[in-house]
Length: 195
Image (cartoon, helix red, strand yellow):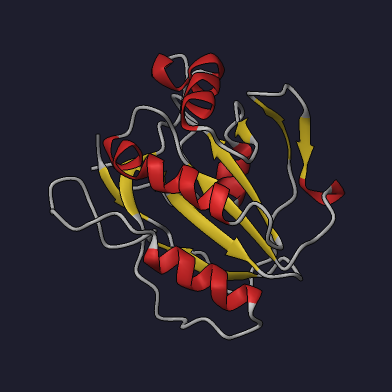
C-alpha cells in the first residue's frame, strides 16, 4: 500500500463520459445518457483498501441520505483485479450488496475512466454541478484509520448541500488520502509517482 493523495483535478473540469458495467445489476452505465441532476458524485473506491473500509459505512449512508435528492451517485473501482482479487467484480458486488449501496458500483477494467478523472487513490471523490463541471474534489472528512476522529462525511456533505442549495463551495479543499489505485503492469498514468 502506498499512501496517495488526490491529484486535485482543476475545478471547472467537465465530467468525462464513460460506459461501464454495474457489478450488481449488470446494466451498462453510460454517463451521457443519465439525465443531469443538480449534482453528480463520482466515487473511486474499492473493497480491500483500509481507507475505504474505514469509511464504507458512511459512503453507504450518504447514498441512502441523498437517494431522494437531486444527486446522481456512481461508484467506480479501477483496481487491477488479477493482482488484487478482493477487488474483482464479484467481490465488489458482494461489498455493494452487504453495505446496501443505493447507487451503481461499476468496474473500470481498462482503467481508462480512472485516468480520465485523474483518480489516484481510494477513496477519491469528484463532485460536479448541474452543468457537470467539477466543484469539489477532496476528502470525505478528516477521519483516517487510526486518528480517532469520527467518520462523519462532513466535508463531502457540506459540498453536496451547497450544490443542492445553489451556493458556492470553498475552492480551498483538502485532498482525499488513501491507497493508490492498483494499476495494471505498464498501465500507470504519468501523474502516478510510485515511491
